[in-house]
Length: 299
Image 1 (spheres, rainbow, N blue to C red):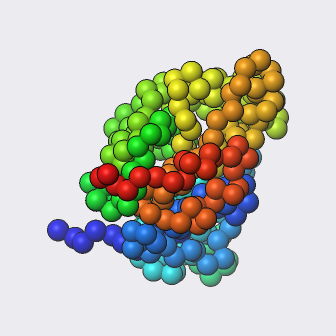
Image 2 (cartoon, rainbow, N blue to C red; image 1 turned 120 degrees about the vertical axis):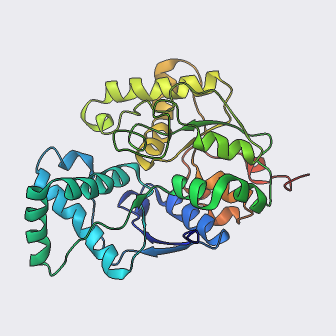
């Protein structure tokens, strides 16, 4: 049996260098705590995000494939892509290049002009899947220094990580990997029926009332279920759910303020990471100070 992978190429994507910087900080801290290597891809470019696919599909695939080619140049490692849009685009690019020879020929021509080539050997991985499958929930529980007891999370996956690309969750409509992880670390998770419903995405820019309706439903449900925080895997979801809470509370006529965290932040706390390394200072909706002081695991 092959040894577990402990070394990964890292595609942070644009969001993790701006609005999602807490995700980048906490992900790096978690991987360091577990002894996992993250090697940022040199000179990576924007994946093109999902919207560009509908504008110039072939160019979008070529832009995305450049990142795969650059990663291959650095070494034979799986690529960790924490942003759900980046994960989706990179995974789709890899699969389409493997399955569509005519597209592959056009993309290869574009890459060759930049003296690059892409064999599409590296798998595109989401960090949640890496942690659950390569490390394992039992090992994560054993590595925990602090318990998440007292927290009650609404685990929100969003619509891109589990659909439409084929992935590791057996139930795309009600994934449980994040729930299982946090329960193993001492937290409770609510039975959140909207865990894969869209947050509104770019509707907040193009059609704000529709975006606010979608986000309000997600917050209202989590608050009604008694969640102490929403925990997510997606920077766009985190941004929409957190940034518009004042406006949503005003239109709802009731308080719908709730911390919205990247899943790597509470995981980092459980693993004993310094809270200052996990990006909590970037939260718009502050996390109560006592939430950052956790009991020792097993106590």
